[in-house]
Length: 170
Image (cartoon, rainbow, N blue to C red; front, top):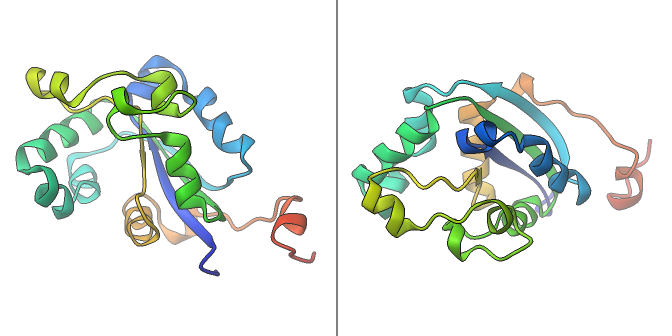
């Protein structure tokens, strides 16, 4: 895989599932031509959530915040997705919007579907319900994908558009 052709992890969190907007959000990725190579609905257990929200979260935000995030992620099912595409990490991050929903621009997933602030979540002692997780960079994506998917669960396929965009022959 070239530096431009990347994979990234997206998690549609419990608030997305509970609001019934999975299809609407998936459609945004489909519209930009993100190639889905892995998809599953799972009930996240604490061990998986702890692996996902690793030591980096503790360093940046503290163990207390990590605990809230783990609790939020394990409340009901999540949809885990792996997308592949040209510079897909950055493309997905732009579609998702700022981590804090109230700062996310209109037109982004969080900007259109969420509004909760860090201050509100902190005051209520809850995790930030921001609908979605997207890997921050290619290295993080690789690590996160391995938490949620076994290699054999990722499907290598060639949609028709790859012939034109990636200049791949049949």
